Length: 329
Image 1 (cartoon, one colour):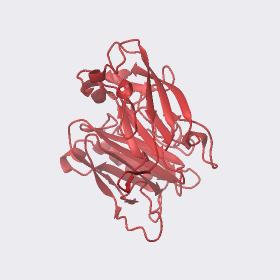
Image 2 (cartoon, one colour):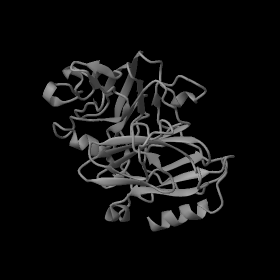
Image 3 (cartoon, rainbow, N blue to C red):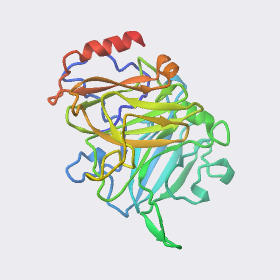
């Protein structure tokens, strides 16, 4: 299951119930959608070494936003999570259904100048135009001089690079961005996945009390992809949950000395990801995540990670915490 991106900016903090609390949690498409290793279809990438072709649509949304989607009328902010295994090739046909020039530009993967997504290389979509962008990935390899070069695996992102300026500043401000994950053989897949984008003074172009509300059941493996956009410098902090400061966010064995952290810089153009077990050692409840630059959190850069009981019911005190969050926003 995936994150719950915004289409209309409506507040998520309506009265919660046992039946409704997980509703809408899969609104953002994940590409591809094939099942693997018993993980729900929306959480599984395709087989390694595949060439896959998808169509994405750039569309205008309410409140002046513009988003990417994998079907007409389904654009969201952030856009869909795109996944690859190291060695995969992803061919994206982007359909520009707006009246503005735009593009799609990735971080962390390989591409030629025709798929750069910049006006510099005339790699853009004019209004109404279809254009195919090709992204490749690779595994670690031994290079000349007895050097080992890293593979593409990591938590990356994609964004517009053409609207408003040659750097896509207006497109990014309006919501043209999303997560790109490249996995390595053996990586553990999550039960749920959430995308958190600090863009200017917003989270996914929203602020408290309408910042994204992420939900998971106690004990589920949850993956967060954190992305920085805009002009400001931030730090990402998660209450009660920690992760390992390495590629995956999880220790690779008992002798892995990667530090355990719960706060990390999230600056323009940067990204990282991690997995946690929801409520592990702390239990269910309404747990805050936010920018730890104090005046940023005070001005609305704070949201809620709601850990439900194992049966999906709302834990005692969580609704009251959500109400206080809403009132303080």
